[in-house]
Image (cartoon, rainbow, N blue to C red; front, side, top):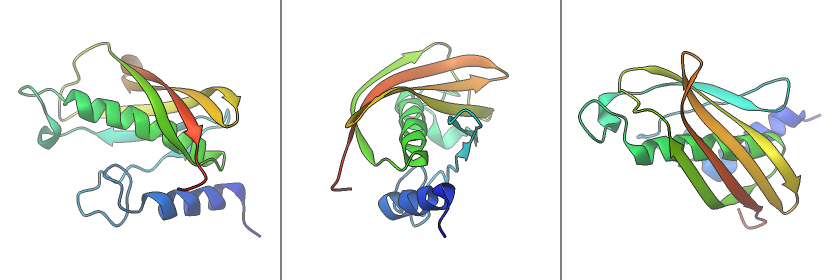
Length: 142
């Protein structure tokens, strides 16, 4: 018997095995692995490093946006939903220095299949450093 969590893990691996952020078959992957929280949100810890910088010592904004997007995608995976990002709004609250341990979490704001609205945050010591809201569209072709 397959548990929901097990099915989600298989789903994520099958559709993202070469993903730059979470792919197990990509040698350059950041190897993100998300855990499910009791309320249905997902979270992970991530160690930022200088190979991902934009300006000197600062994590690249595109990397920040990608981390937030990946968290929201995995939140949907957790529900057994495969979807693509249709709209992404990112707010950079504070510069994020490289070489820090960050927490990333995401949760569903609304669910009206095939449309989903989610929010994600990157936190440093419980301070929100960046956040994003996105609209996802469920996809049958993934």
